[in-house]
Length: 632
Image 1 (cartoon, rainbow, N blue to C red):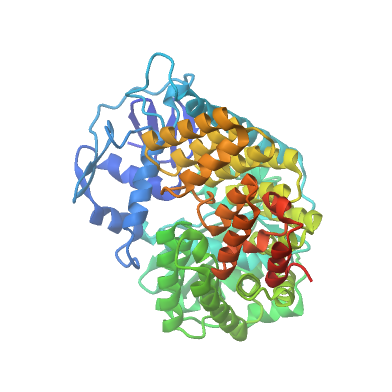
Image 2: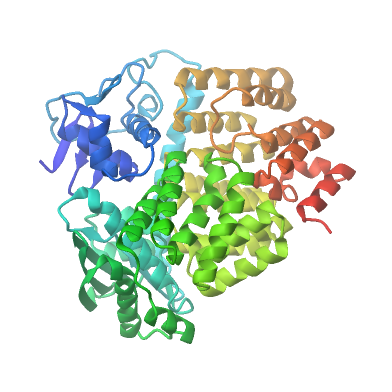
């Protein structure tokens, strides 16, 4: 059965879509895969080992227990299933999970969604009378409604806006191997082709980034609709069939305006020649649409080396883990990339990927910046020595040097080198903006770079949200508010977006709205609903009794109690913000000194963080700015 129905939900396997009352529900790929497995085996125990084998594969690196737990939590959120008294997804302690057996409901008829049915709210125990919990539920309801409107308006806007240059999307390559555990190989091929095409002729060809392209995995939308939504004129479709160390790849280039197939090719190679295969596809496309390739690009395409097959396998496993954007995912990615370079010490792309993983690992709770940034520098330097044309390696080196050594001249040189190599890479623009331009208060340039990143990756909540943060640093609060609302609408489960919106509301003096957004962020992060409500009540009570100072004092007390959402004020840098908002300047600077000693990533933002405006006349603060290299 292609469509499985239960309660007011239905899962359409053909469309790869979860719907409620006929309306699409946002759900990430890993939770969707797990939900499909549980539905196929409904009424039966599905062990954690079976989940691991089905979704991550038998050769996965490291411990993925955390990732399984996260996937289960996200399924419960979208199904509104209270883990304390589940009606659908049951945990079998020490064994695994069982999805309740059911008789399929008839096709759902669209109905209005009530506040009590929103994610994070236990519909079984929702009170009929007035409740103190209505602000949280109302906030989530409004977020969902605003998000739906935002996405619709955004797609219409893109459909009406012709691109300034040819834009192409690499649609997710199909896995024709007959083994779903080989999906990572097809997904990795997709990502590598995006990178290849992005470096060909960026002045004349722009490439939609991976985050936005992968949203179309398993879609039934035709190429014309996809082209309208993304604002592209070209689409690359492909498939991968793998048998042991042999792969067969087919690819075809489609012109969106009339659905014409401009070019098609098929390749049958050993995995060791996969990099040459990717270069051949890129060369074929470049020739067909008459791109102007620089001598450097031509030499790079012609001189593509072979790669150890097992090393490439590790590399793609690492990319899959990296794209989970979780602590467990980064730990797996580092292990996989480390294995890759050990198998093939000449594999420059794997060193660049390892540098990226070490660069961002502290942000996702993997070790500390003082431990991982030196490793990022080492890996990036090795990648550049092997291949000086890797934009990701130069960008990782720039980020690590600026945040570990505060070596801003080297950072600027490496960022510019990355931009020159691949100006079609959304991440290069992203990090150049927030890692260099914003810290120095070059706000209009930073915003321009973020807008380029957002154009290249239009459906990335992370990039769209960080554009809002860039507006905050520039004190453009109205633009920041609109941008945060847009970003949150792209992914209803994007917790950090609500945390950032809560911070913005405090600058606007809208503390009740800040409290509601904070609660939404906590709910989406998986905190216990009763704990979320108790924290919300404490903040409302403090605000009512003592105003803004009461709010900040209560938040300071709550920040010491774990858990907290990402980017909450719970590290030395965040505590410094709380003390600054309370007017306790010496304590704020003391906390900043701790953040500096720990090489906290955010310390480079002290020159533009609005909360620290009250510290601008303090000699100790200026000394700290000079030590970070932001004041000369």
